Amino acid sequence: MKKLMGISASQGIAIAKVFELKHIELDIVKQKSEPEKEIVLLNSSIKKSIEEIEKVKAIALKNLGPEEASVFDAHIQVASDPSIKEEVIALITTEKCNAAFALDSISKNYISMFENMEDIYMKERAADLKDVARRVIYNILGIKTQDLTSINEEVIIVAFDLTPSETSQLNKKFVKGFATDIGGKTSHSAIMARSLEIPAVLGLKTITEDVKDGDIVAINGGTGEVFINPTPELLKELSLMQKNIIAEKERLQAFKNLKSVTKDGKHVEIAGNIGSPNDVNGVLENGGDAVGLFRSEFLYMDSEDWPTEEEQYESYSLAIKKMKGKKVIIRTLDIGGDKTLKYFTFPPEMNPFLGYRAIRLCLDKQDIFITQLRAIIRASEFGKLGIMFPMIATVDEFRKAREIYDKVYKDVLKENPKISKEIEVGMMVEIPSAAVHTEVFCKYADFVSIGTNDLMQYSMASDRMNENVSYLYQPLNPSIIKLIKMTIEGAHKAGKWVGMCGEMAGDMTAIPLLVGMGLDEFSMSASSILEAREFISRIDSKKAKEMVEEVVMADNQEQVENILKKYKF
Image (cartoon, rainbow, N blue to C red; front, side, top):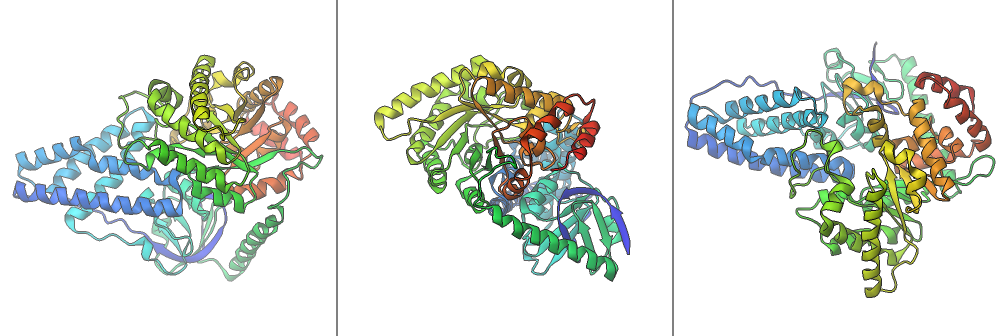
């Protein structure tokens, strides 16, 4: 038996035989060729690759949902990029060389350029280009890749790394988990593993060297441990742990139809985050009290052109109808940064995450904004609705967005008197300027919802997708806790309620703090709802409030973690 330690990426226990995913190492050499034939081969290979990516995207939509599937829009953009193609054709023509060599040379130049850029967004494009270039070159050379969709027995995937294309094809009925040499908590493969709810351990460095096909591997996604050919005694122990995890999931079903109430009787709301009407099923199956975040941008990212008012109306109406009277909060278009559209070209920016995106784009392109607002307001006829604007930085931004909303509402009301008279209009608190000024924002907003993912990275000036600064991803840092506390207190002082729809809302470590700070609504992935409800039922809110006062005086995250350990809920 051999034990390896890696990075815990997705929790759970998995025991199965190894399926080693091998990437073929290509030694592409320059060969004299007829340019006309090579250009035809290049074009047909690009076309075939785009068709393959479209199929992979469809699988990802089915298995993972629209958020995770959206990465393949970027892959299609890369494969369709006319400037890269022109450079490859120019090299084929001038050098009279083979298409594989030309594409390999040009793509390596771009990959190197992107990898050396300071901008995190551009660094991430290097990984996309690498994945796409390999796919096209394989098609040029007629190389068949391993078909992960054909796996029909229980296995654990072992690989140097898993690309988004590969991860999206995994069928969790047979793929019980995976382990890789590289990667971390925020890599594409980790995010997709959590979406699939299969255990994963990454960053193992030598796992591909240490195993062979047929070996039995056991992985503990919670601790980051991987055991190669474990002993019968350890297998028995891990199997028991596995059974306990399954039993715990079954036990939590008892909380499906219960109210979300603390030990001392304080009521909170536990909602689910969704990306499409289909995701409502998961929220209802787990007893969610509401939809706290409908990410409307995925409707745009899955379209070939700007979605029409009718297309949006149908989508929003379906989600509201499915919730049967439970509230649905729709976030208006939050596009830009790492979320792009195939039919709209964003202006070149040094840092698109801090640039022309979300509400900034909507206030500039008001025709697009008004179309969406009309569709949302019309859908309110079918149930309880809230609407919130993303990435608000100033009071003037929110007031301008609300003025547009109010005008559109009056117009729609004239057309259809049946629309709701009680739509709540709120905003996302993702920018520190909004957090410290929440009380003033709440003169105009009906509620606020804290987006901790962005609030954290904007506060710490660090991209959580960047492994070089991943140590700054500190949800329990006292400065972050203070910002959240300030936001909640500011809203409550103005008589408004506060939700949270970032990852922190479903973090069992952070939940007692959020209860203690008085958070009214927790919105999270559907799979976390029951565990959160059960945990909250054991929390004394008064005791949690005392804990918060101690936490905000701490120096760092480590001290906060030690304080949390003292308080047992």
